[in-house]
Image 1 (cartoon, rainbow, N blue to C red):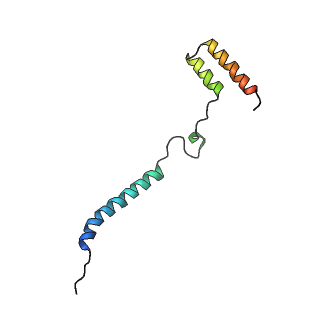
Image 2: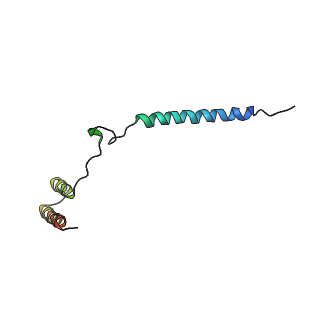
Image 3: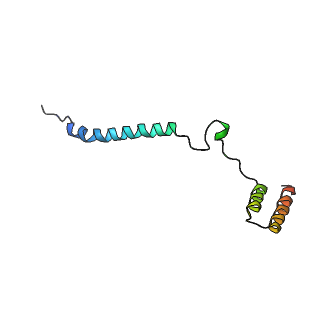
Length: 86
């Protein structure tokens, strides 16, 4: 009785299986050990606070991006916008 044991197919499939298995192990180790900045449990790993429009305006004025007249006008517009009920 003749039968096919598929030995040649396994010889071609096994290296591919090992490559995939090793790749999954490497991916899992990297995924479990790598903590990007801004992620974590401690206070030093929290996302940075988002700047308010006033803080952005102050920073731009302090760096010299805008002049005093533009700064004063923008502050007035922001104050009027905040005072308006929504």
